[in-house]
Structure formats: structure tokens, C-alpha cells
Length: 565
Ligand SMILES: Cc1cc2nc3c(=O)[nH]c(=O)nc-3n(C[C@H](O)[C@H](O)[C@H](O)COP(=O)(O)OP(=O)(O)OC[C@H]3O[C@@H](n4cnc5c(N)ncnc54)[C@H](O)[C@@H]3O)c2cc1C
Image (cartoon, rainbow, N blue to C red; front, side, top):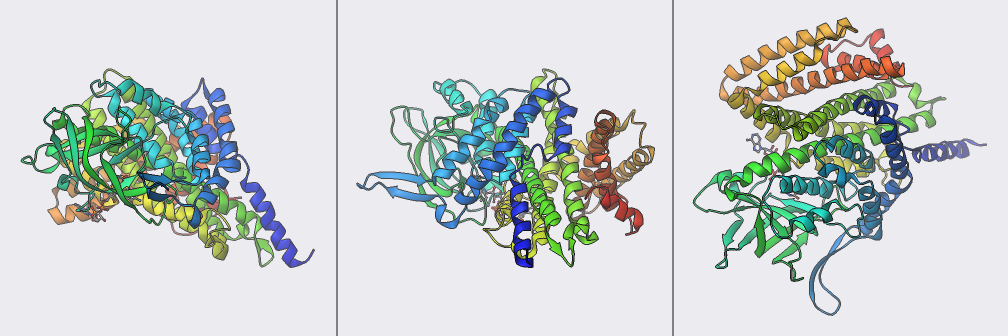
């Protein structure tokens, strides 16, 4: 066999390996299922295994083809015979991908209080295929289900509810959330879209929304100003706008155009004009913004974290496998310390972040299914959702980028691997559901107003109580928690502009320590129950990298070689 044939053969083997079951290929995630679902671990693991097989073999190829530039959704304003249709035409693969993703039953699970983590385990796996055109609608649909749980009845509620949890993509309803307007997304208080009461006392929406993802959703949650005298977010109500009215007519809104986006391209995002659309208030209009924040955006941030981790882990799998098959200068490139370090960073950070978001979601499940949940619990959850959203989105872009470095020239080619598509998706996921600065500023406000850092630090100290193994790591984490407490006190006492600059550093330290502690707990369980030190090895490297910030020496190299082989 000549060199050319050998090189191509290596690539054929690599491609074959990428079709392997993504659940089976991730023993650490399998262990997380054991950790959280002691009694039901085997049956859940079996279901995730079946789903994981479909993601690599069926879903990913469907999404790749759908994302090809000639297969993206398009807006047809009129039918062939001139009727106004405002229809978004999708490639058939979009429907097939939807059948696989919704077919997992994840919406039904998300609907049951206390089952969010289970639902998000499926979502994490489906996100290995990228945004796939369906992730954002799934998060929005889950948001509507949550709003329904907390809002009064209206005639169609039961029917809508059933449709939103239907696992059949051809018959179900999907949701959307339209908040952003052209004058700004972070500053929601500037929303100008109006909700007015018609003479028959029904609400109607007038105005334009600038970023409308899942533009052809069946049900839309929308913010609109119910009283023009009340400025800011206090004057915003939260309304449900069905696409089709009970009499079968289209509701009164029209899509101006679809946005040509850098990523998430198979999902249609448009600009929409509301021209007196019939709307149902979701609870008292005065509480609209509060409901949006606590039911919808809070949840979207949890979904975003799982989505980004799914994308970054798939990028890792693609690059890791490539590095085992690709040869340079006589060796598989995985033998080179610089390649190993690159991969080790992605793996360790991804494993730590997954431990953090799984713990956060398990707390959310406890909160949702308990009658004794307090407002302090809700605030802690808000802080954790913001921390997780920030770090996962921040690091994911780096992870996919560094995975591309491993494939080098081939990494930049759209038809070679899904990596360019994953990078494009990751840039969008970084910016929606709250930019890094929006999250940092909300955390700062929650610290100043509710001293949420005290609850956070108490929670972490409690998490470390009773851990006797790994005393060196435990002591280090305790010491770092004390240092963080002091840093937060200094921050809150500092001048206003310094506060806003330093919150970046403090937020980063908060999530690093939170993740390290969750990974320590999982790692100790893994050693005891699976006889594997895989997570503790990730933790050692994570700590070397971010907490001790060791110089590069032989023990640093050893910590890498324990993760990447
Ligand atoms: C593909 C895509 C789809 C989207 N789909 C939807 C959708 O379906 N529904 C929806 O409602 N929205 C959607 N969005 C909009 C998204 O939520 C907004 O882009 C996001 O909220 C940020 O708003 P903005 O883009 O207007 O940025 P701006 O608010 O204009 O912010 C610009 C910059 O200023 C910074 N900044 C703002 N305020 C502060 C501050 N106080 N301190 C420090 N920095 C600050 C921001 O962090 C950012 O870096 C979508 C966006 C994209 C890219």
C-alpha cells in the first residue's frame, strides 16, 4: 500500500469510528447516570444507549445534509396560486431529524416536575449533532410548559399542553419565545411592542420583533407592553400567541424575512410584524417579566448549557479519534504532547462542566418537586444557571475551535467533518439566552441585593463536609473558597466601575470552584463503584490548569497522559 492509500485508509477508519454509539463512547457520562439514578440507572442507561446509537448513525448525517447551503429553510410568502401563506419551507431532513429528537420523549419528561435532568440527558446526547434546527425550539417548548404549570386555565390550555408533549414531530406543537427587538436584546425594558385590549376585552399584539427563532412555531410566548405609562420591564406582560386561531384562520402576524445566520442555520429565525395578533395573557400582566425570567429564560439557560456541552463533547470525540488515526512524522499525532494537551483541556473542562450542570439540574428537580422550596433556593438556582450558562458557552467556542486545530486544514472543510458547523452553531449559542456580560451583571445585582454569594458559599462548604478521601484536593478547595469569599467582599466594597470590571474574574472563580467540587464528588463515587479514576484524573488536570495554575513540569505532563491515550 502506498502512502496515499494508507493516508486515505486512516481517514476511512476514522470516519467509521465516528458512527459508533455516542453514549457507549462516553463512560464518564454513563457513570453520571449511575451517580444520579442509583435504582433506575440500568433501565435509563439502556434507553440512552438506544438513543445514542441513533444520534451518530442517523441524526448527525441528516443534520449535516440539512445544513448544506442549498438545503436551508426559506420563506415563501405566497403559494403557487397566489394565496398569502408566509410558509417556511424546510428540507425533508429537518422533519426526519425532528422525528428522532422529539421521538425520545424528552418533552413529556420535561413536563413532569422533578424529571428535568432525565429529559436533559437525552437533550445532551441529541446536541452532539449540533443545534440541529431543533434545540432552540425544544428549550422554548419546555419554557411554555413551565409557564402553563404556573398560569391560570384558558379554553385551549389542555389541548395545547397535550400537543406540546406529543413525541411525534409530525403531529406535535413546538414553541418559540420572542423578546428581542431592534433597539436591543439585553435591555429588555426598552421593548416597545404593545399589547392592547380590543373592545371585546381580548388582547391584541402590535409591533415588531427582531429575532424570532422557530419562526414557524405553533405557539409563541411574547413580551409586550400592556401599559405605555409604566416604563421598563415592569410594564411588560407575557402573552401566548397561537399561530392558528380556533376558527382555523391564521393569527395576525407576518414574517418580514428570515435572517441569514452564521450558525443554527437549519432552524428558521425571522423578523416578525405583529398586526393585532390575538393573544392570551399568561397570568397577571403585571407579573409578565418576572414570569419570563423565572420560567422561560432561567430554563433556557439550563438547556443552553447542556446543548453547548453536547456540542463540545462531540467536537472532542471527532478530534480525539482523528488524532489516533492521523499520522505525521511517523507517529499518530495523539503521541505528541501538544496535541494531547489540547485534547486533555477539552475533555477535563467538559467533564467538570457536565458535573456542574447536572448537579444544578438535580437541585432544580428537587426545587420543582418539593412543596417547601424557598425564595432563597430559587435565587441560588438562578445564580447557578447563570454561572453554568456563562462558562459552558464561553468554553464551548474554544473547545470546538481547538478540535478544529487537531484536524488542521481538514478541520476547516465543511464536507470533511461536522466541526465547521459546530463552530458556527457555538457562536450563536454563546450570544443568545443572555450574553456573558448580561449574566455577569445579573450575578452582581443578585450579590448586592440578595447577598446570594453567601448562600452559594454555604452550599459549597456543605458539599465538602464529610469528604475524607483526597484530603489534599479537599483542603485546597476549602482554602480557595475562603479566598473567594474575601475577593467577593472586596469586590462589593469597590468603586462602581471597578466592580463591573472585576465581576468577570469573580464569576469565573465561582464556577471553577463549583465545578471542581461537583467533579470531586462524582470522581470519588466513580472510584468506589466503577473502580475507575477517570473523573479524578480529569479533576487533577482541571485543578492544575485553573486552580493551582502549575508551571509546566513532568507531573503536569503525567496528568495529561492519564486523560488522553
Ligand atoms: C441566531 C439568533 C437567534 C435568536 N433568537 C431569538 C429569539 O428567538 N427570541 C429572542 O427574544 N431573541 C433571540 N435572539 C436575540 C438574543 O437573545 C440577543 O441577541 C441577546 O439577548 C443580546 O442582545 P443584543 O444582540 O441586542 O445585544 P445588545 O443588548 O445590544 O448588547 C451588545 C453588547 O453590549 C453588552 N452589554 C449590554 N448591556 C451591558 C451592560 N449593562 N454591561 C456590560 N455590557 C453590556 C452585551 O453583553 C453585548 O456584548 C437571537 C439571537 C441570535 C444570534
